[in-house]
Length: 316
Image (cartoon, rainbow, N blue to C red; front, side, top):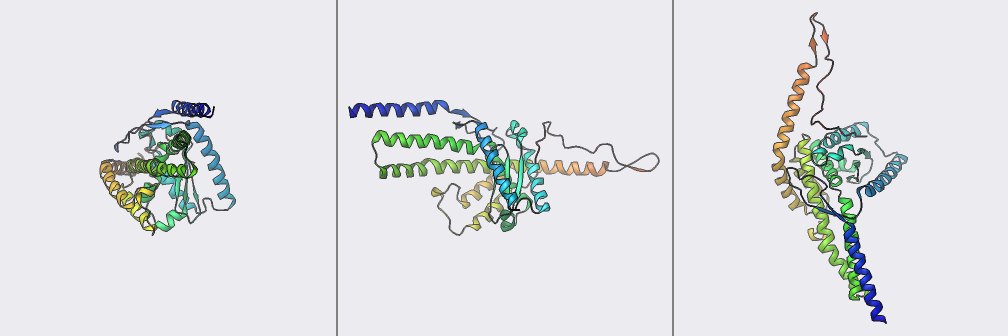
């Protein structure tokens, strides 16, 4: 009788895993870009589910920061952050045309924490500790924000949540089928973390580095700043965690990879810089016209930033 029940339980567990796998879908969240990110992703949750939760969490974070008088305290800093973010968001259509319609928003939070993030759907925050402790240039700040935007474009949080469902179910079912005790289950969970979860997270960071650096270059920010940025970040931590135990690539290998990426997207940066220079020269030449009577006259319409021909994202 016990053996029959055990086999029935095994069948139920395996059926549950099969159903979970069937419920997932394989998607390509972004185009590959110059940096060549073309990995397909398995998703169990829908984008709308993650975006709904992100909106709630973001609203709570902004509300709490506002109540603590730590939200956008310095107008100059806020304007600087929003200006850089606006230029980056204007380039998201190169990877995801639908992201142009996201409800993009960014706020600066007064905190010693060295951090910045972008939630699903384009909800962003920058902590002043990042700016103060690292003394970031605009190019370096663009590298940070581009990296975080890339996480959202690739929907890494959605993919991570999906992977946790799959691996968690596999560990539970495997342990039950094999009749493992609690100690053995802990070993299996550790193997899962080292063999699946951590490398998976590092893959996300590598993808975000690549897409982020291309966004920065397309927006006219020097991609080489990503190298100096992560060298600064590496100097913050005295106790370095071995790469195989970390969710992030080791600073040394990351800097080398960023150097290669920066060289790859440098033509995009040069093109953006040349376009900005031409635009500035055109603006200067047409800013003031002289009419027939010799009076100064402003043009009816200055050259606008309507290229590429897509709906410009709105940043709150």
